[in-house]
Length: 162
Image 1 (cartoon, one colour):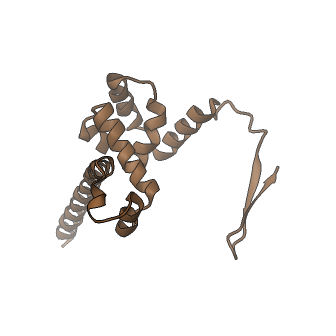
Image 2 (tube, helix red, strand yellow):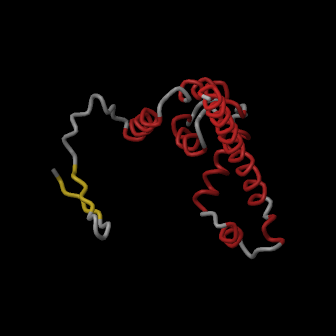
Image 3 (cartoon, one colour):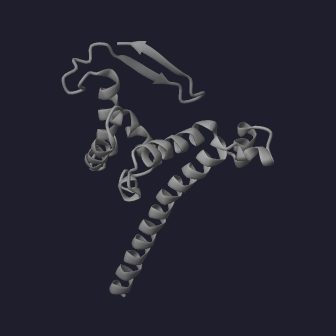
């Protein structure tokens, strides 16, 4: 009985990994399709505007823009292999690393992506923040901070200098 449970558990784990891979591939296809529909204004066959098309799909312009940017940068501009993108861990991670790759050529991007794919989500966020601010979080004295208070009743957020 224990062996059957182990086999069932393993099968479910593997099936779940396959579903995640399918989902990850899906964001690339979705980005490609949205890019083509938008740039060629294919939405005009049925909808009055790009926004109307996205509203009908229940997709925010922000999400569509991120997916199209990923396709445009990684596939069209940098010609990154799909496998490397899948190793990034999702479209939000892929989108998040774009600023870190600014100014790099195709080969440099591919090398950087292999390194970035090894980072945890929190390490990736730290790298992005340091890139944005130009300040290493490990070396910062953290003197300019604030406390964020959130009301558990209404959700109001207020900042207080510390």
